[in-house]
Length: 533
Image 1 (cartoon, rainbow, N blue to C red):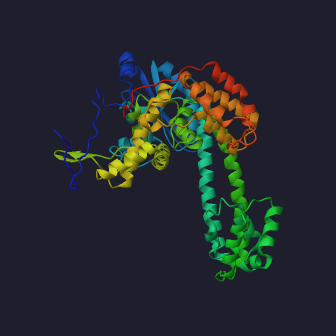
Image 2 (image 1 turned 90 degrees about the vertical axis):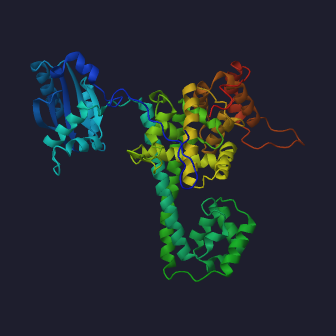
């Protein structure tokens, strides 16, 4: 039986729910352990966290309180006293197994979780949503620090909502911190760019229209901030502007200066406080330039982290660059934490809400609100890039348009879901996946070389990172990668021959890498089915 048609004539495939044998969360169930030791011998430590202190309680599985809610300061002495009291109670009441359920509260719960884990206890986390749902029926309208909340945390743990979190290697945490910090700087730099443009438009109305992109043209900002007005540009003329740019070692074209003079001759009157606008724009531009330098340095560190993960294989997909692959890797973490690609889309919340009661069923609502929004943002940004730069996904989007899928948000979600499936197979399989989106694939090492050249990475660091990237490449791709590098790093052409583009000195730097690739060269063959998607 086919899925019901909507009023627009579209048919939706309903999300098939998995049959579960237990109502507890997969990473929160404790039933086998309770059965093994007995409910009266299974202890649950419930911890309600605040910024500087917490309240904790020990009770058995039945809810019998063994240690009442007790305040503990977040310092070494406080944690030592709490853990000592817990050990005494375990011995006194013959508790044979115990878990620690800590409510997630921003970052305040991390010191508590680390303290109990270092003492040898299994520290789990309880989401505040779960705590609220178990607190409201018992104490409606009452939210207190301590007694009511720790009781709700205990009930949540009993019902399987105290979850075990996958442990990440420190290198993954560092990569995540760097990518998030870079994203934060990019947002701040974008805000500064908008402010600068607003002040420039007040001081020099219509000046920005002389350039295709005022931020990519160094001459544009230099002339505006140094000369300050249309009259000043007319007074110095093309010769004066050329001399100013040469002293600043900024490349320019004469036709650009001619366009500026044409604008200056017809410029609208500036704001009465034009000089103040110019000074503010200069200060903001200095701040923006400093952030751009920080972003460039962070991107070099991010690339160094990416090349040591299997997510480097995603660079073979046209439309994915080093930064987007690194952000995806940082938010995903180790691929072993995902059983299949549905776990990725489930964690990112790339599926619709569903409301069903009796014969009423609304399966295609908006995206679920409870999700890892950073991972969702990263996947959808990659989907934007794939739609713009990847011919396979461009063809898919055109096909969906022809089928009547008119909402661009729907198409973006579909691309994000498909990319999640492809990326799971590539990263978990450790190979360049044979899929239509990578038939005319990019070469990973070539992409990295261009990235390092643009970011002016020192040759010794570049070579170290490329060696690490080579270790992540499947052996059957070494031949193709070596051939791409040879073309990129070919020697200078003979007199009369056409000169190739790209940095030619890299041939000397990468000689050792090419030898290493050539030593393991095999015939590159197909990996995987032709199109499993």
